[in-house]
View 1 (cartoon, rainbow, N blue to C red):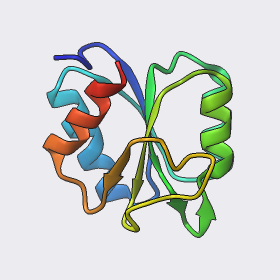
View 2 (view 1 turned 120 degrees about the vertical axis):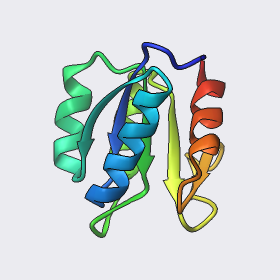
View 3 (view 1 turned 45 degrees about the horizontal axis):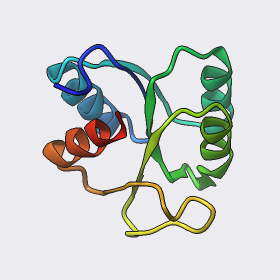
Length: 115
């Protein structure tokens, strides 16, 4: 599997959804980091490094995920944007989008494509 052994940051503010994401990643051989549910917390984790990729919920308790996307992009860390809205604004409109509610196979496919 393409994501085997990869350290993947899970940014998701709904705990049950985050737990499901982490389970799916583990089932596919990845190492989930987090989950983190707030922008400030996410920035701290990103600054610490050691991340191969991220799944970024675009709306964190009403806060946009933009600062996290910027921090990941600055460090060259690939990420998938999770949103129920189907698209996000520039400059991240070209990033892979994962629809919500999540479908596990889509998650793994999108993450695998990053590597």
